[in-house]
Length: 333
Image 1 (cartoon, helix red, strand yellow):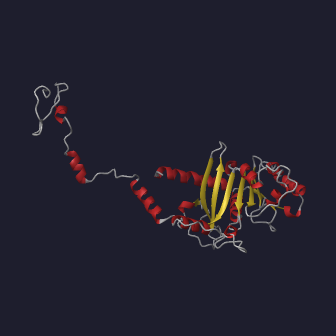
Image 2 (cartoon, rainbow, N blue to C red):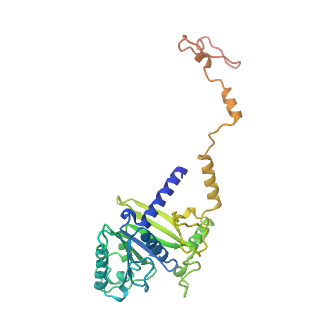
Image 3 (cartoon, helix red, strand yellow):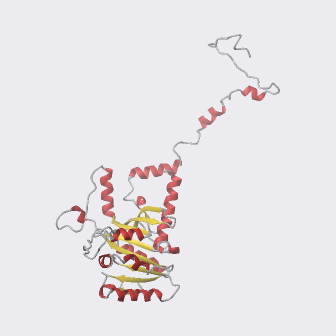
């Protein structure tokens, strides 16, 4: 990829992730976060809440598994202790309060709704989305759903398939340790390692390096209004100041970077190639040395004598060499 194209993609995608996390201009009405035991979505939810608080966006948190009110949350609704109609009415009243105020509605887990209200899930979530309200929901991919005996249509899609179809942005969170381990295996042409439940080992629920403290890897798929999709991998450093990370973080500067720019992810060959591209800005040298410049000036151009003469029309000058065979019929000038 050309350096200018690579720089354009980097700048464009960094602006896009900043716009999505800050919920500017209603960039994504419905954002779906898919997590697992290997990497929780809590750091991403905390980043959303932190930026929403900085942008004066009201946060409504619907809890199905969180017992205490999280930080930066304005309204906390314990849906795990209420019926569907009760917490739905409470959410509607919270969203109707202060008309015109931008709001962020967070569901810490959609698995209970997928298990109980899978058929009515799209209509239920659509009632909460409005021009001033964005929805952020988490789905646990490693939690199996119970087999519903009341489901009549055997050809209906799975709840997670339906959620991914409805979402305008899909985030899949990964552990940085696991991503680095898989990359190292690919570079050596080895089989990529499995972690946690994917290992298939009895009694193993989490793999080594799960839920690291340095940060999380985001696999993003964003769909624009035109239908064009954008895919990118990012690294979100931990906001915990005690975390040991090599990515400097400041409040006034964007901390999210492309995964390929992470120091531990980039290989020495990529660094050398990037340095060569930045130095030459091309695949060949365009400059001339002093000797090349003198040799160029000493070259006599073809028909140079004809350029200095005048009034003789298109006369052709030809100097015969010792190896030429003169023919009076064909070589007359």
